[in-house]
Length: 387
Image 1 (cartoon, helix red, strand yellow):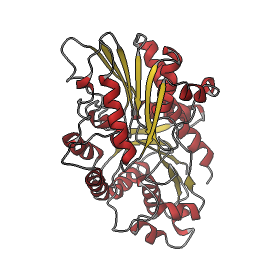
Image 2: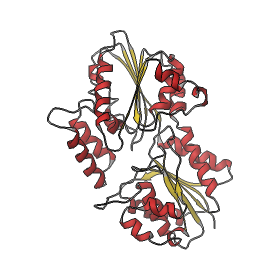
Image 3: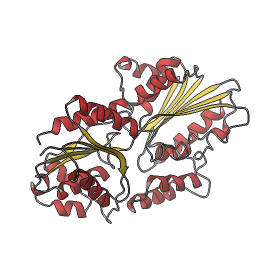
Image 4: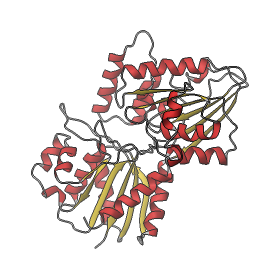
């Protein structure tokens, strides 16, 4: 691919702009947030978010971190020597749990969150840091619903390609901590919520299934809520980087929603009918899975679908990837697509039919692997048209 490195640079510029660490530090400065007495961070970007908060509040601040397995890693050079220190000095408790399917640790995390909130003193200021993934990573269930029930409900909705808003709405119905119920148990002085949005519309009611909603707080409690990073902000940064690299940005929209096949067709239509330059799309498509799906996620499926649509076309190159660095249950963020890939190896159509795009992309050396990025603002599609 001629523009492979440029695609990656543009994608990474967007992701770095919305990193959990940078977003929290910026919010603390811009909104003049006062020093918290306690900190909770929950979600896939929770580690860099709490790194930033602790560097501000002090490393001895009473804190709880809930994140995905293998996501308790440093994302900022200032804290490279600090992470072990504040994990082990007794003031920060860390829980890693399952995503996208909740597991027993998710239930444990839900209980710890509840106990933490309810233990705070009347004068305390709680800083709650929320990012995508919180819905699966922490849960507390009523007696009539168990973990097996929750996993079955989640698996069925994911397999049917349900939108995240619909999945989160179901979670809010059954959860004892979602939809503002977590903070209903707070008896302190003030709550500040900083959220990184991974949903269309950037609503705190939907992010993490509403775990950061403050409307059930006791009357008189001070409250602040700010969305500190979003897909829009990431796309703007990607566009700026594209300009620095000498490309004209021809299109920028948050429009990659709905069925992944339809999304691929809309993306290609926009590019095909436009001028040479950069095309930036954001959002989160859905995939209806076969009975025994293969390896991959929505971004890898979209990359392979796009490669099919541009088969034989040497003018268009594309990178599709989740801003959190993960796409489905495997370790890839997404994949590259160009006019040669669909015919490059055998079995491309079968890979699409079996939702096994990841295996095909790896075979063709077009899998995009980043590891955890420290943020989560849905997906970015970066395309270059150069005829």
